Length: 160
Image (cartoon, rainbow, N blue to C red):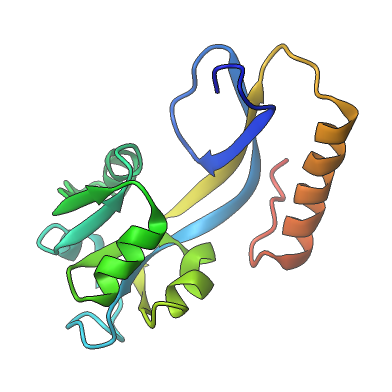
């Protein structure tokens, strides 16, 4: 956020000094794979992911998830968009790890959702400039987002 946006939404990440955050919701991390993939219908241990053909979305999430899970995860490939990762997994090119909020999106690619153990949860945050006042429109949209998440998400943001 270099002054080009009022706020952003994304997973937990290191912050620049001028950026602040507020948790929008927390999501459990799951594995998404083709229904014919050998891990389908299985609870997968984090250690097992180390030997999988993992498709990562972006460069930031895997190191943070890897450190939190206590395992070294090395992706087979890194893509920039979730749609690309899901498409590749649908072609049996590997597996994707992402928040369970992605499960409905994964279903549109006919992907299966597998639980990971031990469970790992990750915050999805609203990022904003630490010192810039929000416009009334931005504040109303922010309020709408939190209200929507509280109504529709499996695990509402109760840590705000």
